[in-house]
Length: 360
Image 1 (spheres, rainbow, N blue to C red):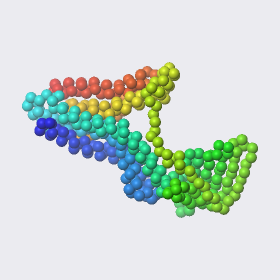
Image 2 (image 1 turned 180 degrees about the vertical axis):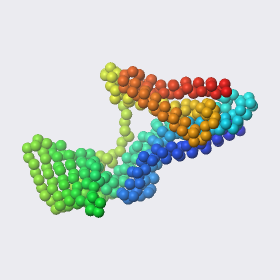
Image 3 (image 1 turned 30 degrees about the horizontal axis):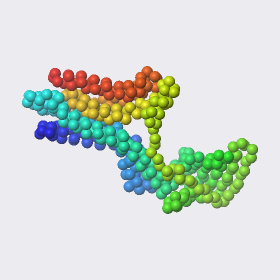
Image 4 (image 1 turned 60 degrees about the horizontal axis):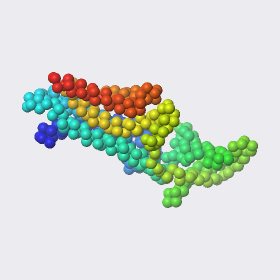
């Protein structure tokens, strides 16, 4: 790379990292309340909260990296155009395509990062987040019992703990146990405490002053038993077996669609997601290059306005994706066309903007 290439590349880095931090903070804001609740109310350690944030980051970065790349390109070349640096480059005999080389390299690196995160980072983070959640449940089972809502800490079991009135002590618990296919078991108690043995992966609850109702599925009999103390075991073994979520392979999806005459909307969405696996990272590459002519044309756009303009373009891109998905499910477009049409339109717009910028 020449001195000029390194200079442009360096200028792209500063707005890129600034906008990336701002965008990640904005996306993280919607999770902030829950994280603070875990930290303050449930007594989760700060390290555990930071681990949760770390596991959420791959999903956040897949969304924010394309936006940050676009905003960086817009603001950098907006400044070049406004400060007449671009005029000096053109006067030195450099074409717009030659000036765009470091932008292409920069966008390609961001594309590789987005591709890695979408293909491997997100699946890994999903599994790691589930393992972390199970670990938190093992260490602090009260995390699984949010008051005032129906909780499902294990399969076929529902637990409700009422929210106490201000100044009152928490009382009461309702448990619906459907693990036995022959009958439902309803348990109510005045108070309870958690029991756990993480080494043996044994967890449970000790209930005090309550009743057990056995309700057979055929409705013929109903048994009621009162108790002063009752130990209920919670089986977390199914949850501890964390497996990678599997998506139907291409051949299976094509077979299903052929059998349904290409009218299975659920499988059409799956096939569209399959094509988007590469389509969305490629959009990062196109958006990074698009930002260059956009910044040149709107040369008086400051760093903050460049941020807003980048967000506006990304909103338009996501609307195109929504329109593509609607067209696919409405049987108007093939899933491949629905997945790649937004990228094709972006590429055409980028070409037109480059042509307009080169004539300035």
